[in-house]
Image 1: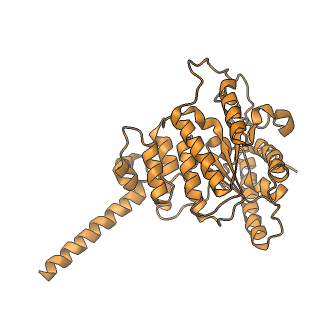
Image 2: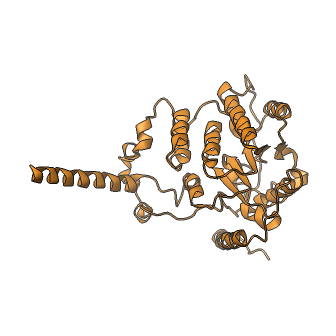
Image 3: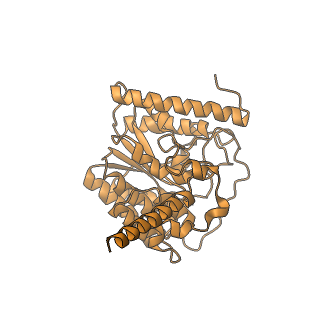
Length: 347
């Protein structure tokens, strides 16, 4: 009888170990092409004493540079962004952040208010899979799943990715148990240039009202920040496309006034920021390149210091050392990208 139990136990261990290894192998690593799927998980490796947390979609993680914010203003910031991050996901990422730290300010990009439900499973997974397990992640999954999705597929990703064999690459083996840093405190760097030309105008909509679900989570975000004594700042990044309708903007303006919240629409601050859509975007106006992100960070960092009253923390020994290391990695990638894209190095 004892031998039977031992054999059964060993068999169970072998099966479970095999399933674990398969899951590690088949789950996407997000280190080469679609690196945006790695951003959420990178936060957990950081020291948690940030002054500012950005939350939102690509309009935050491609448009602001935490390294520039530190070097110019001594602001310790992190971007908890992900591709097409829906507002309920932003809310739960904020809840998740508050498990570790309470920043002085939270910056939320309001582009995602246009969505009242999740649009694609792929975007859900690029946000949700990187979250550490907690009751907050469970709530985020339940709020995000499309009707065709299943909760157990998030608990056991092997159920979702079991047929991914044909897509495997060397990176899937190399990064089975470790990964590489692909962002700079959540910022995704691009130095190449593609000017904004022939940007399509917005098509008329039958209804410009934001949905009930979107409003619900903005109100929850506002209430949570007020409860925790956090200054919530609403922004609209200077991305020309997808189109941002004036009717949408008025709704945000009215909400911000009612709640006593700052709201900055960077589309209307081109002269103040110095953004040049001929040189400061890498994809025709959807996102800023490094030049644009650093210009936007210069303007917004001054706003955070002077209008919000956030402190300059340069001179704190631990932070200085940490940011010196981050700045070195930032400069190394900048030079590598200049070489890759054939761009002359800045003086």
